[in-house]
Image 1 (cartoon, rainbow, N blue to C red):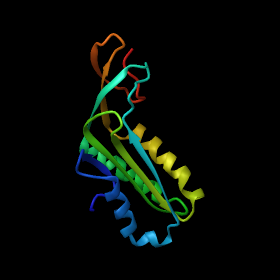
Image 2 (image 1 turned 45 degrees about the vertical axis):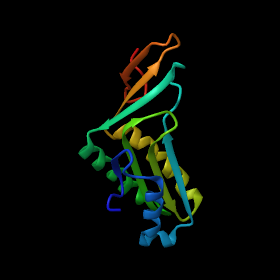
Image 3 (image 1 turned 30 degrees about the horizontal axis):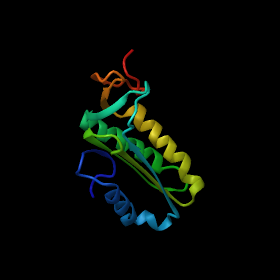
Length: 154
């Protein structure tokens, strides 16, 4: 795989692709651990309404650059051999994968904090946009774009 981080259309990239790729890297010989974060679509939103689906879009060129920069920054940490962030785009049902974040390194103590930083940074820095489609308690369907903090409009 050529892309070490970035956005991908749903169905064109898998978790297994990422794991296989990291194991092929020459730096992997120093790794003793891999940690993963897999973001999935919740079935219920913050208001308790049923999520029917999520649509994800991105300013793709900028998102690729941002995700690659985050990974490059975090790969410089002591004991870290690789960091990858791959976010999927398209239409998703509850339970489906949205994002994969992988950190490989010498020891688990080196990589868990980096994994958390990678997740927090992609969520706050990458231009990836989510439109949530929900069904209210009264059965009404509505859709809205989520803010940067993942909140629906008031």
